[in-house]
Image (cartoon, rainbow, N blue to C red; front, side, top):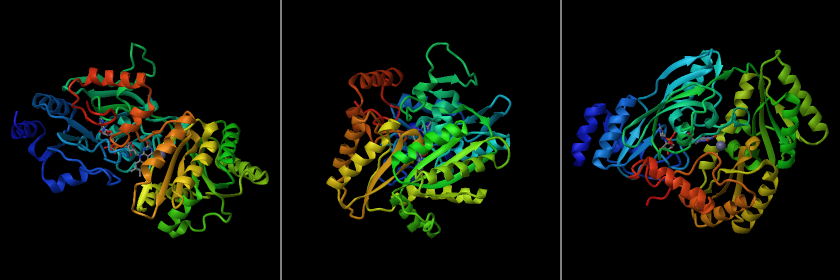
Length: 465
Ligand code: FAD
Ligand code: ZN
């Protein structure tokens, strides 16, 4: 099949307006959020149903053309940036299909935007707890394909824990309908788990059944200054105990991040009177009588202040106060983006190793890039840190050696070089380096079994060939 035959066939399936080939319209879809990876594609195709996705994949199989699925293109490892072939964008498949409030389940199409899903759950008196900085534009299909984490993992788990069923189109166009809301189902292998976190390399997710939760009408939010990472972890353990696991978010932020955000937005300049190296943005959430969580938090932080576990604290007094504190946290990735050269990381460590790791990693930065500034923030409650190093100099030659040194350190502590952003095309070499030979061989066998011609998002996660 020639290129123009394929484009004609795709136009017949999705409608010619949904086959995009002009360079200007394609451009934003061929560069990643950080503007570090640029790709190319024959065309961007925007199907409107599972049947259309299936027909597109069958046509691409016939033409021997590869396919890269794309959601909101907010992924941080450039997994959705195609190298060639067809870019399959799910934006037209954005329907909330059904909300079953009684059954605590919701059926959605893969292109539904996360914030719309949260809103639909709320409108039905329920909570869909997945929450991350990109929620206004990322899609649930992308969240599932990357097993996204975010702010509420501590309490509700990663996306993997929030998915009950999936509908997936396999690379040759066959449809697997696993769209179920069962809480228990042990009929053999749990196939949906294979597609969750597979970053578009095994098939296209087209629909999902999501778990919903009761709403948590009460919440209490604070930013606290702590003397060390170890103190932050001790405070978390204490708050969990005294609130009956009521901590829903526990975000570590270092001083340099607060300073970087304050340069972006002056209102955060005088956030806290006491300057310390570390801060925590924390939230308690639950039901119960009005103000009870607020009282509990005030009392616990008062005690922690007396014992010098906490150096200073600001407790939100209103919803808008709480929103302002959270906005500060959400500004951090944007603030990191503003530097000339950046080392980014997304690492996970066993909780007991976090404080040692940070100290050793800071030492490595001091030795290998003394002019660099550490900007460390992350989901401390999950042992997940974004340990970033920035520099005003455009020269990036220091980034690779230092990131290797940090990943070696992560491995020594039994951690992961990719906690939540995945592998995409940015971390293919690291995957091969740090996963065992047995794990790599198993992954290759699974990939070959589902996608024998390597046409689903080739070169992502696993190196081509
Ligand atoms: P895309 O970027 O479009 O795609 C991501 C991957 O999924 C690609 O490999 C793509 O091929 C694949 N894919 C997309 N849709 C499908 C589908 N329907 N079927 C099969 N494969 C598909 N992540 C976190 O985990 N936690 C955070 O706290 C967090 N914060 C972020 C904050 C900001 C400001 C930004 C920009 C990103 C953040 N992320 C975070 C990254 C996160 O992975 C993405 O935001 C999100 O999960 C990706 O969704 P997307 O729709 O943009 O997917
Ligand atoms: Zn994160």
